[in-house]
Image (cartoon, rainbow, N blue to C red):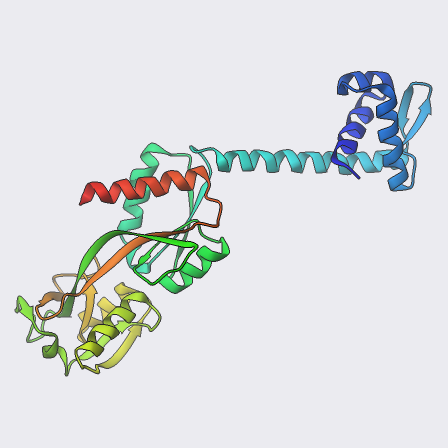
Length: 294
C-alpha cells in the first residue's frame, strides 16, 4: 500500500465522482481508477458502489475512510511538529546540566536566551557528568553543561569557564577566620563530600590522593546544597566552588594555598546526532555569553 493511494482514496471519497476527483488530483481518470483498484485488491474488499462515473462509499469504504482521515491528520500534525522543531525561532532544546549549576547558572542562561527567542522551549535534566554523557550519546540530550572529562569522538567538549575550589568550614570552626590554609591542615578533619561518580568528587579524591591524604568521610550527598548544609551544621568540612549555597553567615570559604584547585565547566554535544536549529541557536548563545564574560 502506497501513501499516494490513500491520498487518492481520500479525495475520491469526498468528491464521489471519478472524473472530477482525477481533475482535482491533476491525474488522468484511468490512473485514478487503477490506483483505487490496486488499493481494493490489497484490502481484499471493494470500497465503492459504482454507478457510471459517480461512485459512493460502501460500508467497507465508510469504515476505511475514517481510518484514512486519522492517518492523514496524524501525518499533518507530525509534519507541523517537525517544522516547528526545525524552525530556528521555535522548537525544543533538551539540555542536561550538573546539579550545582541549577541554582543560578542555567536559570540565568535561559532567562537571557528567551529574551531573544521566546518561542524556544527547554526540556531540562539534572545529572552528574557520566550520566549526561550517556544521555548525550543515546540522543536523549542535545547539549550538556558538565565538568571537564576525557571524552572521545563523537562527543565534542568545549571549555566555558573555570571556578576556584575552596575549603568550606563551619563559621564556628577554629580555621574560619583564616584567609588561606594548606590542604594538610584539613588532614584530620571529617569531610562531607558529593557521592562517588560525580565529577567534582573525582577531582577532590584525586587532589587529596596526590597530597597523600586519606580523609575520613562522614557524609556523602547528591547536591552541593546538601553538602553545604551538613558543613553549616558542623558535621564536617568540604571542598566546594563558591556559590549561593555557601551562606557566609554559617560557613567560611578559605583559599587553599598549596594546591591549585579549580573546576572546569564546559559544554558538550554529539557530532553524530542531529542538532535542531533551535539547539544550534542556544549553543551559539552559550559560547558568546561566556566569551563576553571573560
